[in-house]
Image 1 (cartoon, rainbow, N blue to C red):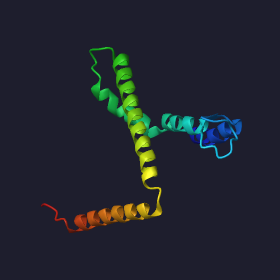
Image 2 (cartoon, one colour):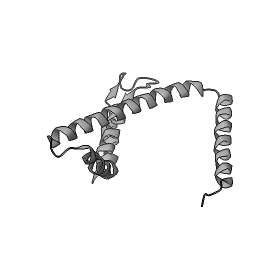
Image 3 (cartoon, rainbow, N blue to C red):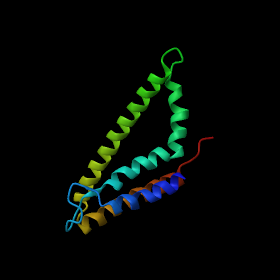
Image 4 (cartoon, helix red, strand yellow):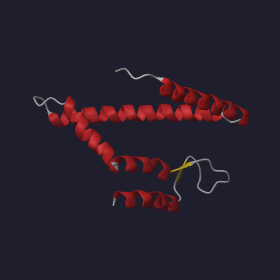
Length: 132
């Protein structure tokens, strides 16, 4: 059910023609549709792994002597605030990296360095001795 809802959401929102940041149908529009903003929240809310995480993780930090609902809300709001901050910083970094990696030569060098580091890590793991 949740999967059908999420897969139908972008088509429904896109067909509504609602956009953020510019008029819909503008030539070369680099705006973001409401679906692009709303869909991640729906996907996250319907993700069973997230629900299991909250059910398993948050109660460890709740005192049975206090107001349980207040403590759970405080922990959940704190988690959401930190996750939002993390996503914002990640998006900001990605925007900066996009500008930095605009040229093909810089992308090739970046890929070479990244591939070299991954290869070196693989060789290191292959040659590492297990402690017995």
